[in-house]
Structure formats: structure tokens, C-alpha cells
Picture (cartoon, rainbow, N blue to C red):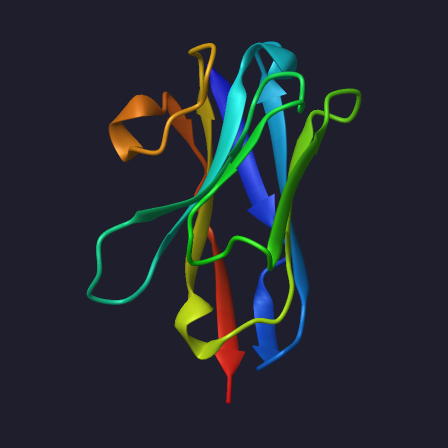
Length: 124
């Protein structure tokens, strides 16, 4: 089992920045690729970004590419999502997830463990 706890969400103005954190406990954090997903009201949960076990490879949705950076610190068992130039359409609950496969996926069903989510609200 892997337990994931997100933090860092909140209310921010358009153009602002936030850094989300995902603290992991349980099994070896470095054995998992990590992903960030988001779900806006009335919409399906969608892929945002993912990072490989070592942090060497990163993947982004087109909607956040160039504005967001995913990273991880395996010594701290924590993954991060830095989001800049935030837009109202970034408003959602953000979830981190752990994927036991070699290359982290972009689909919800490819992930083994999920956090409870953290709310991000971007006001105009």
C-alpha cells in the first residue's frame, strides 16, 4: 500500500502560481512513477503531468505544458507540481497518483494509488 497526501492548493488570482505537494508513505516511493490529475466540476478527471521513477522523464498535458513543472524528491518521498500563469480553467481538485509501471501513464486506470485531492481555485 502507498498512502498519498496532497497539499498546497488554495485560492489564487489569474496569472498567479501555486506549488502542490504530494507526500507518500508506505512502500518505496522511488518504485513508482507519479502523476497529477485534476477534476473540474461536472467534468471527468483528466491527466495533467507525470514523472518517471527517477525523475528523468516528465510528461505533460497540452493544456499545462510550458506553465507547469512536475518534479520529485525521492529522499523526501514527495512529488511536486509547480503551476504558473494560472487560468480560471485550471480550477479543479488536483490529485496525485502512483503508477507501478516503468513508464507512468496518462489514464486514470493506469494508476494504483490515489490521494484525496486538493482544491485549486483561480479567480478572475
